Length: 293
Length: 321
Image 1 (tube, rainbow over the protein chains, first blue to last red):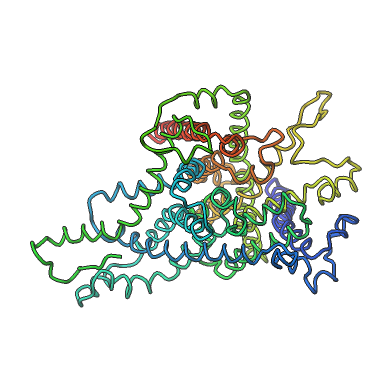
Image 2: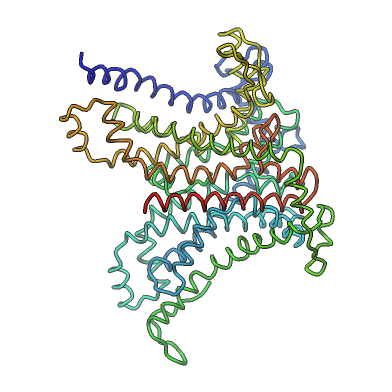
């Protein structure tokens, strides 16, 4: 055998397939372990931790899920409140961010104005500022403004911060797409009497559906997954907790591990479903910095 | 929201089209620029001011622009604190290895997925899971898997190797004997670095995969004709083409790992030799209720990062030039 065929055998076949299996297992197993444990009774886990199969009696009815979703008054963990908060925050953040960013991205790709370079560089710089550096002054500002009191005020405070932290990514992603749309159609529309906003609404929006969907999904995912700001602004009022904060706070209490896994599945599910449904649009966005961190 | 006057006649003094366009641009950009000034620029400056104040958490209500002071005590306190050296060392070790590991794993994964095989789409999708899953969910799964009592990793280590259970995330170090020498293996720190490798390799994977698939095939044909073997083609053709991607990945990953708070806070809370600057900032703020010290340390963090970036770009600029 020549050196080439030896190498082809070792690297091209044997090591390659070992590698593929290795990466597949390290990524898929934790997901399986999480789902499997969420369908188990905690006593079964403690007595036989080596067993990697779910408990059929806990699969239906799904006892751990029912327990975490039940209100606290009925002895559950009150997750419905967290789910509602998380959805509210993520949906409102996404809606506002997208409107603001579509207009801004349009202006920064299509219009000529002084200071354009400064605006573009400013956005990149903002993207690099560590969250923890802004967290302290924002915490101080919100405390002084009385934004850390009622649930609606706390969630508003959170949405405003998410807006500022998702703006640069969304503008950046949309800009990249807008530059690929030919200007001719917009010019034709303007000649036919459309105003700028009408042109954006009637020409640019329909042409950019994939990019807008991708950017919107990233904004949603960032707001849905966020932990640090939620911790700072919401911690002392459990009624205002988002899912991420709620699930993790339960960890410090005496809550069975299987319920924590059910909580983890509940946070993960929307993200994974969105990703599978829109994978085609979303993969490109990951390398464009869609998810920071 | 503003209404556009794009094609309508302008009232009053007439403007040129270019002026109209400029005004429109400013109007469309007004909201994001305002948001960024109020929520990024102003807090950043405010943070610098706070770092010079003697300020406790309970005194926040009394803080106003009129009673601002100027003291360097906070800086003296955080930089002179016992354990600052260790804090800095842990942060650097975490950032350096937490940058290298995901990049190396990402490159290997990209090389594996480069040539088509059955199920490659599925493979790529599954590999993205660690990166897109919510941080709270994946840290909880890791904590569960590494649990000393019922975690599956310890169960396997016990059943297969007969090892004593290790509480991986709360053990500072274990003595390890290797070639007759005794080492102290920093267990918890290794685990948080492994977590970095696991969670962030998909990011490098996607970058490398895109670059590899864009490499022209004829380079490899030429290499084969010249008798270059598989490993030679990798080292002589593939690797040199990945320089720019690697440089970008190192830069981004280093910045993000250096600033990372969630991962270590959620995995270990900074215990067992994993305390990094970002977690210590949180400890100053809530553990010690010292807002001034927390601010000062966060400015130190931003300062170190700025210096490192400056050095990186200088060095890079010279390399490129």
